[in-house]
Length: 282
Image 1: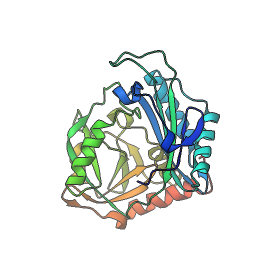
Image 2: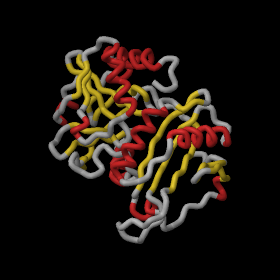
Image 3: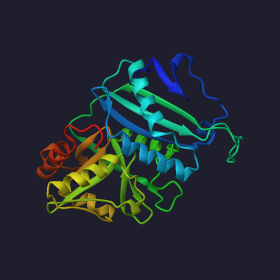
Image 4: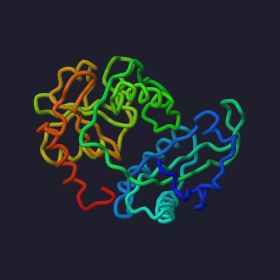
């Protein structure tokens, strides 16, 4: 990744070379923070309101003061402009600020940063592998976009070692849950299915848009608890995320999948494009 020239920290844009965060910040010490990743195209962040609402929900769950929506949106635009980016990947991060060396929090204000980098395209299809570790659907962090991402880092490194681009988790009930940075959909007998939020998966913004788009297009779609074995019997599968949109799967573990040739996946991708067309903030 090429380091951007500028970053936004606590209310102002500064040179990345001059950027400093306290070594006592709890985001650094214990992963006590939340974040959002968005994309921007043509100088406008996509779905900023949905991401802000999820950020507020994550902050509320973690006990971190959320930013006002106006500040959050202004910070993204200022950072993009400072880095000369029209199409960008945007990362908004909030931590609980400085605190003790243990898990107890201090009384410092939250730390907020916004970073923007060049938006890079994904390959036409993706390959995934299942990993031996599980998501805990009863965790305090279930469904929260927390900066405590070590599980994801470890799983993705294993997937990369095995030649895959993404890792998939089961939950503790051996149900299909999610990827390290994606939601998972499968197609069975023409019906599009994805794990429910009760599985412990993140409430993905693109996941929600795809569900709405399929319903609007009259396509059969449902949120349903699915056994991990569904990955060996489904007809098609695809990932969703804010940077990937609808991303067809060409391989799951050692099983070949239709990838971009999947007829239902193609219909879903088109339904999604039609649903969001002409709208920056659907």
